[in-house]
Image (cartoon, rainbow, N blue to C red; front, side):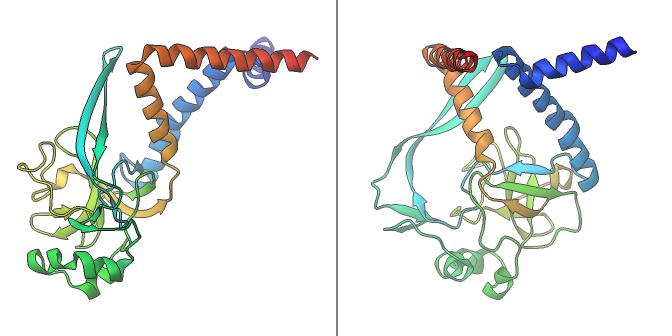
Length: 265
């Protein structure tokens, strides 16, 4: 037993204090395993959902007017049999053309709940029974942005105005606002219309089965999710571009080499 403790202590000392690049890689791998397979499931058990933390990867709930993409391209690469897919806008409309809920404006700005309703409320008035007074009392009445982390609580009594996360036919889950019950329907605040089989081939939010609902959004952590988004973007570029991968490895190796040389002086 004492011998085992010594080996564990020696390994931990090497892992934590070594300047060897291998120790950094192993440490990151251990941290990933702990977070993914222990921490996240533990939080999920407490919150009663399989996905307690969701990273917002689109702008469909954003209350800012944003530049309009005129040509979006879906790129896919394979890494050891795992398919990585990422949407990329290859062409935007001119900088002075911004959009929110299908309405074009000349500048990019934030719309609080009052200004949002004045701009986008017509759709709700024509297609739902939601009023401006009701919208003011909704959770996330000012929306949220790409890169935010949303805290999810397990299934509960769902009400109009709640923001829920549900599984799409394929791909990432969708997090939108409930606009109708029986059946449950949602809509992204930033979107001009609901997603359905005609305008989107992977999700139909005009009929959401209850068994596809993962949970209800209860809070947000701004921007922290960009860490994952940037990491996945870098991984995607490295897999797609072998020269970039080699260049990054050379740079990291050089940095560790210089660090060790300076440490020995």
